[in-house]
Amino acid sequence: MKKKLKDFFSDFLNKKFIISIIALMLLQAILYWSVKLFQIDYHYINATIDSKIPFIPQFVFIYDLFYPAVLLTMYYIFCKDRKNYYKGVIAGIIGYLVCDIIFICYPTIMNRPIVDYSTLDWFTGLVLKITYAADSPALNCCPSIHCLFCYQAIFSLCVSKKVKWKVKIPVSLFLFLIVLTTMLVKQHYFYDAVLAFIIFVIMNVIVYKFKLYPKFTNKLKKKYNEEKEKQSKRKESKKNKKINTN
Image (cartoon, rainbow, N blue to C red; front, side):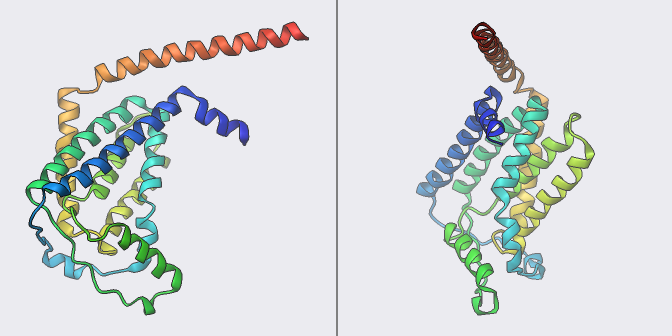
């Protein structure tokens, strides 16, 4: 177990994955909080369908699995199909920028329900309170970044020919369930998820049509091959030392 963990963090590819994910998360956090400096009036965009979507607090547990679910899915894609992973990263960056432009031009706010916590068990109530407090007030809801990246993770997984359908189907269903939970726990309106889907389609059309990934991936491939060659030389030298000592 210790050896596997050591290999996970020492491997060049995994380091690149960790660095790329951290960079994306930092970019998202910086942009998300920066746009609030330029916002003035907030809008409610709830539709008739939102009143028909029930509030189910217990789904907060699935909603809170968003980050680990997306990260693990993207890591799996990274290991199986780096080309599709980097396409997803580029599409994600485009998605961030588009979302932030919308947040500045048309900032939105979520009108959450008044929750009677006495009707919930203590653990569900606690998790729901923490979830709401972490994003309070609920600003910049449309488009939903949660939905956007679930769509992207599903797409990157499903278009890969290197991933088996026995993996694609359950993971995609779970990620889509997270999309539904954004509305079931009243973190987003229906239109938030719809606009996120439209942006997801546009950003992937841009990435695939204009082929924004080849130069980027070729450079990484070159560095990867160089690093793997260095690693193999180091392993070979260690083996030779062991042989000489024996």
